[in-house]
Length: 242
View 1 (cartoon, rainbow, N blue to C red):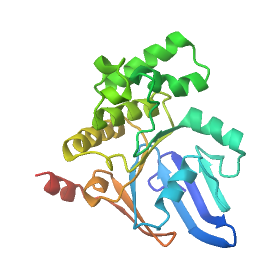
View 2: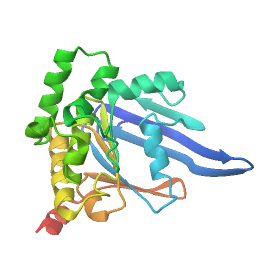
View 3: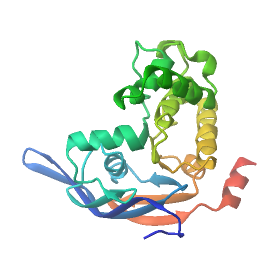
């Protein structure tokens, strides 16, 4: 059910996830339910071991729940095969990782084009869409630079462009500022905010309260359960920025 009457993009119901290794099993999620509407910007927080990274992996179709339901745009995707989940990832989910995950021998342009290659988009269309995505993150002039020729902040901006180039249903960010200094972190967060204001649906895992307060809603996990789910007070954000 929608929280505010808008279209539901993500609907997670009673999701559990158990990691098994030999004779040891760890229950990372213990019955998580979550609804994210179109255009929301949700930050997921929690201490180490709370299940936030596991949850993001399920939302990104990198993993599947042990039990429970995960619907993306109304379609049940939690129980899909790896092949079908890979198709969903390539067509509908933009993922930004803390470690950038760029191909080191490829230019920024080629890195951004990669999801479009997998989607079967023609080379001419790939180039145009990728250059536009790089322009949106302020890196049009760095299109032919390889990752080792870019700063950490620029590499993360390339990763954001790669996530956006497929026009995804949802953009997922895993600690997007975790490897950045304060100046580069601010630049990346400003881009994320612009992406949100353009209408994108965003879910971001972060350990930082300051970063989380850039979202419009904070979901807190502990011991594999949602323990709080509250809107961000914009007055608090404005006070922190002043």
